[in-house]
Image (cartoon, rainbow, N blue to C red):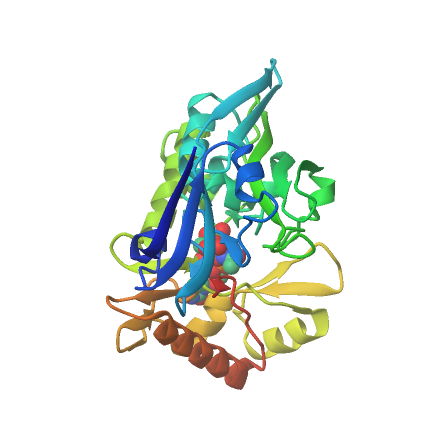
Length: 337
Ligand code: EPU
């Protein structure tokens, strides 16, 4: 089914809760609806996909069409003693999906509990947390190619997943609309507990079970990250910067306790943007209606009534302070419109 809204307020459709409008919003629930939406002659000129609106900052009215997938079906494709292959439509709430996998006794998504957003958004920026990434469990992504007017699929390898990145942020940006995602989950225990105090926290909760891991991850997130319903935000506003080893080593010589993480290649290291912002003295910083969260400096918040422009001005200030103190450029992880 296709539902269209015109001149529609966006406040409830973006987790920053900034007051902007979209000229048009089209909701669809079946992949086949896209054939009608993009039929020759009636296709939207300027368009963008919006899921839960959890990773976007609107800084102006959007004069085009926001395409919003709302299909919420979860279908088991194949299940045996070792594996569960499941397809979830793009509109499924991500955490609902994780809860479903945990209840079903399937391993692989539990560390990604409580990440705000939808299944369709997960592959775009390869969401990740607590040592896991969506790419670890994604097997196929189904999408509609608006240029070819065709329904297509990509395997995990073809998606070119990397840290907070994929082909959907590159070559297929502005062209693909993800309609569903297939996940391959394990039926035997495969806990991933090397991150921080996860192992100890899970043991303290009674042992390594899927349910305990999910509960610990949820509690950890709730203790650090603000609830978007209470304080508008889009999770991590910046990406953790990836720098040449020499740069990381030089900084670590100066700042002994600076966290450094490996990357997939030996020549680079990942730094913690939250640490850099915190050490720039900005944790809890507030100006007007916007601020840096007081428990996780990587998160910018709307204290109420902020415009997207105010959030952007704060983001630029944070970038400038980090650049001045550490010589490091931090890039937004959130999509700015
Ligand atoms: N840190 C500080 N001060 C802060 C924040 C962090 O010193 O205010 C330090 C921490 O003590 C730690 C390091 O920086 O040593 C890294 O912090 P943390 O473990 O909290 O993770 P992060 O790198 O800040 C990333 C993801 C989060 C994800 C967490 C947990 C990115 C951009 N962010 O944050 O994802 O929940 O790891 O795995 O990679 C999101 O993308 O929206 C998101 C919340």
